[in-house]
Image 1 (cartoon, rainbow, N blue to C red):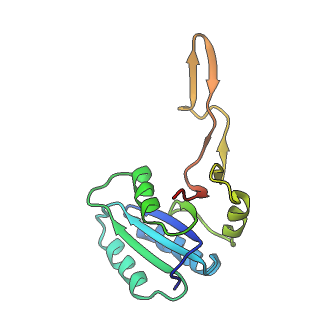
Image 2: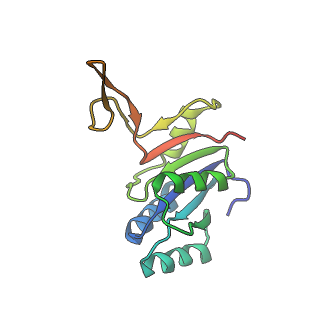
Length: 158
């Protein structure tokens, strides 16, 4: 367990504990010990989601796992914001619970972010017409690039 984490990994979830369990198990294997994991429960309704998080909270071995339960289901984006407010690390990594982790990607993300408070690292940037990011203004077509939200990293601004 770590008291002063360098990296806060924020994982919102709503039900589908099987996905969150797999994600936590992967992080247990690959995430460095200087990470804290913040689980943001978006007001789950499935019993196994409550039982599963209880086990991880009662059996901290390698990582400090912190848990926050939203009073109501507020969605992925606002749940990430709640996690960012709770984070103690200098670096924030926002991770969807359905991501498969196959190695330590965290060191690479921290290296890419560096010391800048103006850098956002993403798993993928969509710079093609994805449906909702295409706009027609005065007869001219514009595509707005965006970073997909399943994996984002940045520094925490104090």
